[in-house]
Length: 244
Length: 340
Image (tube, rainbow over all chains, first blue to last red; front, side):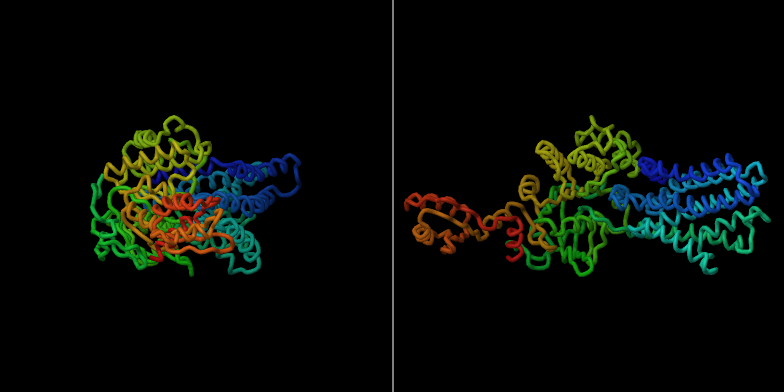
């Protein structure tokens, strides 16, 4: 049953134009990386690679891809009313949630991890940045899982999931996390960077500002667990109109 | 297939309905009876409100096998009631069960329940076949492909089955939704305004199909705001108006009450005064008045009045220029039923 839900979700996610937008989005860091290599920009290779990936992927592409696909998994179907064809089947709500997440998470991970790996290798792969790139790819992959779970849950919770998701990324992670140290402990971006820093000790990301890696891993697990629970809970209480 | 089948007498008949909150159309046997516990559809004192707005207000009824029409004007609460029956909306009060199971928060009920929602939303990128096949697979049927083809054949959609739903007409999408709803051969079928957007041929085909399914022992409840649709299809009817059950029972009985209600006609003739004098002598007319250049006539016997009016006009050498029923909207008919 989970397989059927997942297959239907994949068809839904990739049947629309959003996939082109996402591919273009994921291609931006790669193109910039290739451009940087071609122009032969000065600077230390490892440092430049870490900064570029953090700015382009971790701060922008990662949350945006997670937001677009995550909110589309269930939220878009609630919005356009097609969820009724799934909800009125004898399928336990947790199975629907698992199917949706199984279909949505891998594409997000593949897009952002692929973007990180290719862009990172292009910028500094041959300048000693391989370990940093692999560490960032691992961190971004875990971050992608967390963002996807969070935004899938948000899509079931509110019809304004895109706006709420953008507010979280821009206001909470972008502004408040930079101003208040405490808010960093509730930031997927910070978890992502902390994991990457822990996997590349002494690397350019490994600064005093990073969260403890244990806190980061626990934080990621908590986001995944709580988001899944909220998705199942909300799906079980989802109210729909049969008519217009 | 499990679940109660075969005709069960007197469930929707006024004699067999749990008495809804007044006002309800009464009948000679309108004693308050319990709905049989094995009634496929049972609604007991169900209400649903949104904030301060009451969409369905203390409605009770039971439905047995066969076709029952849920009739009411737009905004009467039909979709909300069907939503509660289909487990899509939580009743604010009371209980709603299908085949003995509360429908809210019980996905298992969908093994025996099929829903054709009014909302047109279908995944436009899927082919009709894929859409119905997915429905069969989600029902856990052993051979979803065969079940889908069977259902598509029933609704006469096999030929365009490989086209995407986005290319279907409104009527075809409606039939695709019906195929998906009956792919698992449910005992209870709920349809919200199923004839919307269908052309006359499709409408007839759908009606034949529903009759055939009812003859096989299914319990079918469909909503409509069009009296003629209900008249042609349903043996039993529930009339919902402003969230309340205005009437329930045999359609012919309710039709008679609708016809026998007081009717008001506005008439313009060559001699209104003479015609009024002739009309007030008629037993079928209980009031006639001249107002603003019109003759307003009220009658309690619609058929007798329509037979006598031209006769009286001819006998009095009065030419009828215009005869117009003043308020024949379905809404006013329902309002009358509620007031009774």
